[in-house]
Length: 182
Image 1 (cartoon, helix red, strand yellow):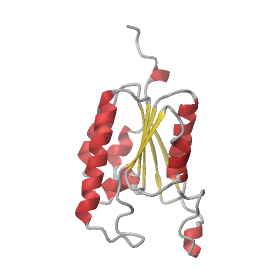
Image 2 (image 1 turned 90 degrees about the horizontal axis):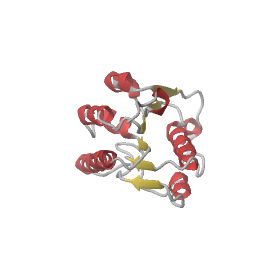
Image 3 (image 1 turned 45 degrees about the vertical axis):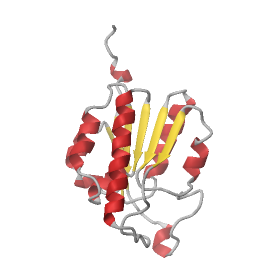
């Protein structure tokens, strides 16, 4: 068996920050990988409603797209009990662990997983174990707010991009725009 070339080693990619574009960047990466015929898994840890990315990916044969959350936690009118959010986050993590261990994917995107940890829905340790135990060729993409609060996770990343808000329509009362924000 030949030795793995460095260029074939899977990366750990983190998109974080308070600016828009974390999910957008991850979905662009996933789309690019799918275009090369790579097998892609996307698990969204928060989103439960129709999103353009879900609609766009569901027709691609080499992409599995799973929405596993219960919606935003403690913002935008969330009234669900915390334990329902915790249970959904845990189930999403267990799904990610099982799918990654199965070894059938080339790229896995765990959208908003960072926010589930910084928001107190998931402990950090099992996420670190997931990163540490990923198959060597798997590219693993993690997104979410407040990544700076998780230095142990950031140390494991090969690529970190921080989206920084300079100006956002949210500040003038526009919550979200179809096809731009979701």
